[in-house]
Image (cartoon, rainbow over all chains, first blue to last red; front, top):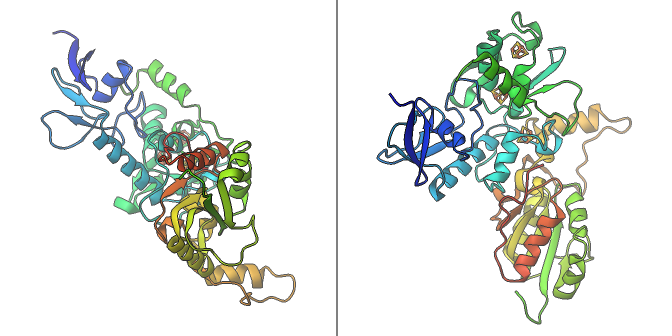
Length: 236
Length: 179
Ligand code: SF4
Ligand code: SF4
Ligand code: SF4
């Protein structure tokens, strides 16, 4: 069987590896689909809803990171409708917790913030929730600030799939979902954490950071974790 | 909006740090053009006690945090054609919103009673009462254009003002960022 298949992306015929997701197929052909939870080397979960695409013949939007590309598929990755939905999804992420970019360690280096700029989000049309959320300072080297977490689960997956420590999980449901460390321990009391820092480096926002960094100073080394997963052949 | 008569511009300073006004003054050579085409009718940069009628454009800095802010925002809206929220505090409620998880009474007690070196008392004379939350301008009145940024980039402010003066719709997508 041919290892390549042909699909249409925004009308253009492209070849891609059999078994690739639509997201990967687009990327391999130099076409960009926005996303916040997907990361090379980690299992895709379709959590952030920013990589939604239109597939001809399917009357709902599909997350491109978890949808396999199939021979003859025709996919739209850019349209006015998708732009509108992506803006909406991003605004909902911003309204859900407390994002005060001006005083955030990740200001200027944050994937959520830069995607807002890229999508042309100049304001949030939904009421901000202002939830009262904690900051876990108990780890000697790292900080978890729930105010900035978008529940993308990159940290959960990198810790479980790559480091093999499985420190993180998501507890609760819907709007009450929270990142949790080992059945609700503080991070400092974790029995499994090796202090490798992978979760910090892959976190797209200022939710996980190294201690000792001030506003704008936390620059993530996401690429080095991606290289590591490629070497180990982890994920896809 | 071109022609002989000058465009009436107002600015206002709600719960912000005045940094957005500093950014406005940082638009460099545009200030010269503004002097020729714009009449500044209200705001911290001029001495006008009452918000005037029939203002063309208003730039509002700061979150809506008190009853005073709320009233001024409503007055501005009712007398202004194009209302612009200027900077993150007006657009997202930003730093002023960091008090929003603390009840107002507790907040004031902590600051003015527990935190006071002398004469502990919550000030009431001549200060408007705080709202439960500091909120973005758009939660109180309809806003026509948002210029995020803390402070907003002078280039973004210049783009909006020149577009409006030339009768065009400003397009900020990709030009601005939060924070
Ligand atoms: S995490 Fe990103 S979007 Fe949230 S406050 Fe920090 S810089 Fe802004
Ligand atoms: S530092 Fe490493 S081991 Fe500890 S929680 Fe993060 S990814 Fe897991
Ligand atoms: S802490 Fe960061 S990586 Fe983990 S779920 Fe929240 S935003 Fe994602």
